[in-house]
Length: 454
Image (cartoon, rainbow, N blue to C red; front, side, top):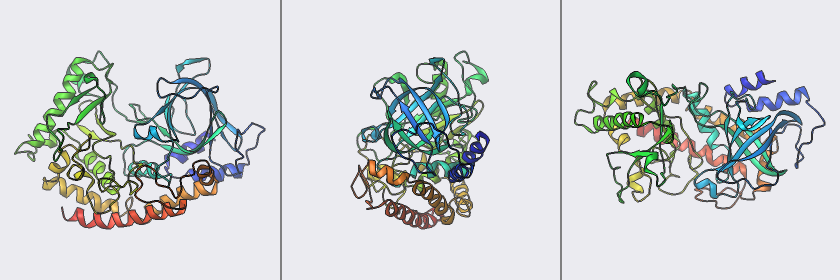
């Protein structure tokens, strides 16, 4: 069974095969299935027991996790769990991060494989709430991986906490350095000179706390910002506690040199220009998937940047698409005929702004030419409307045939209601899915013209 699951998740959107195989094998034991009566073709059920203690935001608390499919237990062990999220933390349906722990020592992390995903210790349970299709994040992550990039692998599941049903969730790999995740070199505290110092780094552009030791700041103000906002780069790996002074200096200088080169009059020069500092193809793929989704958070929040040893800056992996693909109604994010990268022009007063990079890159004819060729190629396969529709239909069939959609919205009675910044409010889950398909169709048509007109 583990080999079958490994095949399924690596194939991205073949979760439905899990259900068919389970039905065929007719797995059936006498294990307790918790507080809900699941049908034969149900999703995997994750049951977290925190011994009646409410799960806090920080720090993690010890708990137990059981994972079952058709009453057949696939995992049973210790975890440490906490709630997670920024704006999503305010939703009634919480998301969680957890670490798998040693059964003999609940304070010791342990790498395990969950539902066929590669072994690791850090995991996320994302609970779609304002996204009433339930699928936007999975669609974006699977699509980015189909494009040839790493993104978090995921499995649709249902969740119980202390026997109380919580709804449909997405079990995700937490983004971190790992051979099976963000595959860059590990940068140790004693690597402070020469080639060792050149990688690997993971940075994010995101919100910052008050501690200036956790980030550094761009020397360039974002264009069209009206409140003097700045672009901040957070240390993800090594994190702020572990990164050395020499490592901080190296990665800060590298990013500053890239920005200086990009902002220079000779920014297109193949030797002295920006191309010496970045992996262009990664910037193009990152741009195209965020523009396809008109992701209102793109480029300014949850934006990951990596640098491996002797390597250039790479954009990605992508993260956080719950307010994309027409789901939000602010800053024109629900429209199909605007660029996401021009966010600042519409909402220059927001705290987090888009750096100048993207507008400047689009002034380089070589960058634009590569971008147009990549778009044309993607439209023949990964970005074709037929492929995207098929992916959406597979997810929808999986969620509806298992009864998970009904159970989710019986628990969270939000269909037909405005949640956060919904651009569209459907009376049924199917109406939400139909809106998503129509939105994507309109978006593709606009981008075909807009990209070819750059």
